[in-house]
Image (cartoon, helix red, strand yellow):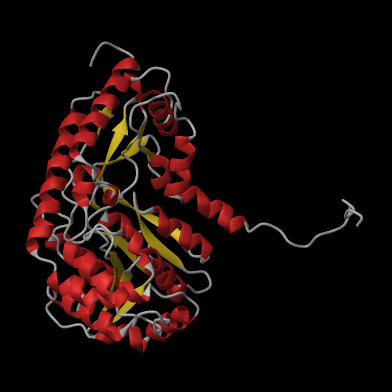
Length: 422
C-alpha cells in the first residue's frame, strides 16, 4: 500500500488544556527529577517526594482491613458493577463514620463513594462549573485542583496561606478575589503540602467568610485524623449550618492503602442548599458517566470503618510524629533551608531555599535534580505548588531510611555551600 502524502490535511489536534494541566502533575515532575539519577550509585533511592507510606513495612494497613477485603472477594458476591454513588452498605457505613465528629447525622444519601479522592474532586468541579465561573484555591495547595480546574474551564484564583501564621488562610486577601461568578473555595486540612492543621476557630472564620460570599467550601480532608501536633483535627462539616460543605475524603491515607482507590464525597448541608440549587442533581449526572470504586473494596468498607481498633491508628501516628520531629530538627540545622514550620499533620512540610547560601544552584528544580544525581534522594520542587524556590519534603517513610535521607541532604548542602556557614 502506498504511504499517505505529507501534504494531506488532518483535522485532529492535541488537547492543549491537557498539556497545560500536566505541568501540575506531581508524578510527572518526580519522573523528570528521576531522570537525573546516577545509575552507578549503589545506595538505596530515598523517596522524600511522594506521599505513599504503604511502600514501607512499618506502615502496613490494619489486619482487619486486609481480612475484610479477602472475605468480600472470597464471597463471590462482589463481582458485579457497583450502583451509581456506591453500594448502599458502604454509603451507610461512611455516613456513620463521618457523623461521629459532627453535631448532626449524615444519611447514606449524603455520601457518594468514588474511585479515590481524585475522582471526588473531578465530580465536584464538573458539577459546579458554569460559563465564566471561577474557583478559589489555596497557594500552596494540592496541584490536582489546579489541573482539574483547567480541564473544566474554571478560572483559578489563588488565596495565600500565611507561613508566618502557621499556614492559615489569608482571609483578608479573599475579599479581593471572590465575586458573583465564584462557585466555591477549597481548603485542605490537614495540609498538603504544608503539614498544617487548622484550628476550630480558624475554620469557623472560613465558614463565615464563605457564607458572606454565598459560596460552598470544598474541604479536602484526605489526611483527616493524621495529626500529631498541638492542633487536633476538626472536620469542616461541623460548620455546615453556616455554609454548605462538600467533604472530600479517602481510605488511602489513614489506612495506608492508596492503591485501593476508595474515596468519597460527603454533603454537610443540613439546610439542604445543594438540593435547592440543583447541585445534587448535577453530581448524580456526573456519576452517570464515571467508573465506580472496586466493588469488593466497597463491600469491605463497613468492617474496615467499624472494626479497626485505636491501636492501629496510635501506632501510625507515633511513627509519623517521630518522623516529623526528626525531619524538622534536621532541616532546621541546614542554613540553606528557611521558613520552616513544624508539621502538625499529614506527611509533608515545605521549606524555602536560600540561594545566598548555595553555589552553582539557581532554582528549586535544579536543586532537586542535582540532589537526585549526587545523593539519590528525591524531593519535590515547589514550583508545582506555585511556590518557586521552595521544596516539599515527605517524611512518611521508614524512620531509618528517613534518617539516612536527611543526612544525605545535609551532605549535599555542605558540598554546595557558598560560605563556610554549615
